[in-house]
Image (cartoon, rainbow, N blue to C red; front, side, top):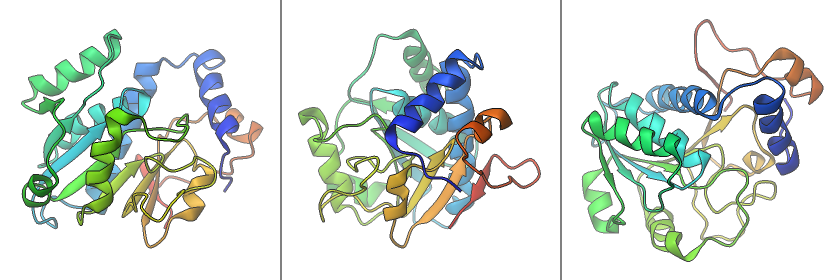
Length: 231
C-alpha cells in the first residue's frame, strides 16, 4: 500500500472534486461517518473510563470531518463535546455545527482546561489540522495543543496527527502521540512514524481508476465495513 506525500494527497482530493464531481460535503460526510465507525471499533463506549468524547475541530475540512464524526458518535452511545474555536462563515460548516447542536451536542469556542479534560472525558478526537498543515501551529491553537500533548487519555487523530509534518512526521519529542490514527482515502507518509498506535483506513469512496492512477494499492474492505484496520 502506498503512503501519499503532501502533493499527491492534494492532487487526489482535487481530482475527486473536479474530475469525479464529488462535492465537499459529500466526501466530508463519508469521511466523518467512517471515522465514527473506526472509533467505535477501536474504543467501545463501555471500554472507556467515560463515554464522553472531546472532539477538537479546526477551521478546515479536517475539522468538518470531526463535526460529522461527533454527530454519528452521538448515535452510538457516546457523548461528544466539541471544541471548535475558529469558525468559518462557509454555509457547509455552519450547517454542520447546527446539525450537531440540534442533536444536543455542545459546540464550544472556549478552550477546555487540561484538568477538566482528564476528569471528564474518556477519549479525545484530534480533528484540528489536515494534510495541508504547514508548521508552526498558529497562536490560537497553542493552548489546545498543549492540552493534547500532556493528556493521558487516548487520542484518535483524523488523517494527520495535528502538529506533525505531513511527510516527516513529528517534529519534536513534545508533539502529540496518538493512540490511534484514522487515515482517510490513503495513508500519508507521516503515518510511517506511528509508534504503538492503532491505524485504520477510512473513506471508502476512492474510484478504482483513481486508485490505479496513483498506484495506491488500497487494502480490501470487509463486507459492508466503512473502515479497515491496518495495524
